[in-house]
Image (cartoon, rainbow, N blue to C red; front, side, top):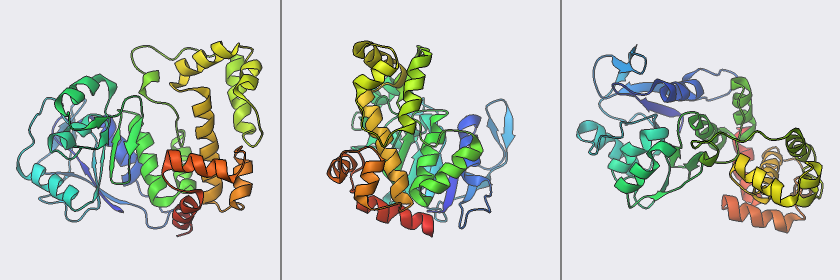
Amino acid sequence: MKNIAVLNYNNASLFELACAVELFAIPRPEFADWYSTDVISFEAGQQNSSGNILIQNKVIEHLDDYETLIIPSWPTHITKVKGNLAEQVSKFHREKKRIITFCSGAFLLGSLGILDSRDATTHWRYAQRFKDRFKDTHYVDNVLYVYDGRIGCSAGSASALDLCLAVIRDDYGHAIANQVARRLVISAHRKGGQAQFVETPILKAPQHFTQALDWVMQNLHKSFTIDHLANMASMSRRTFDRKFNDSFGMTPKHWLTQQRLERAKELLSGRQGDIEFIAGQSGFDNATTMRHHFKKHLGLSPRQYRDQFSNKQAS
């Protein structure tokens, strides 16, 4: 899935378009077999963008030359998509090629019925409009993105970067995705969902609170309880749980499990030790517990994950 088309149209959002260009269209000669990306349009001539910036696209009539289509945005007021664009995107989906949307881009797929019976998300500002219009789609609240390997939707704006990195992880493995994230000076894998951004700002966490979380990241291999973290943060367990939910949109236990899974995924991708060793280094009680969480959260076993992603990094 290395040939990518980024759809542009008149008055498109420049930020989301730029996210796709930054992640997929900039040459990265340090990586073998990197993406070949075109910014395309089905309309002739230059396209206007936000800020009255004119963009010259590659004008095409079909998407046959591409394996991945990125839709950075789409006008939410358009209820019906017609013409060659509708035909080509629908054909692209029927051919089981990968389609990625950012922010309001999910409205284009929804209008074509591509998201029927699927999980999808969009920016929280458009959530109710999306749910009202596409009742056959399973709308997922409070996530930065959803991605199943074929269809991906980011919540909006900067979460497009999170979804892009997930795609790169899928194609090239953790190590390369982490390198790209470092060069962009962004987190390789942000946690939490949209709830932390909706209307009210994130509560400022006391210093002891952030210090406790920093300690966790340095000591994931150790056995400790949430009560222990609350004590480190100089909070009661009830206050700690509330502060955590306010800041991250999830429980401390859920967050800790995600951190342990991320550590295990990194070790598995690098083939650093056997399954039991990796379970211990990631803070799971044993390999059985780690397998349980991999199946529950990722839908595959640690061994399957290692086989899938370590091979990508080696290629």
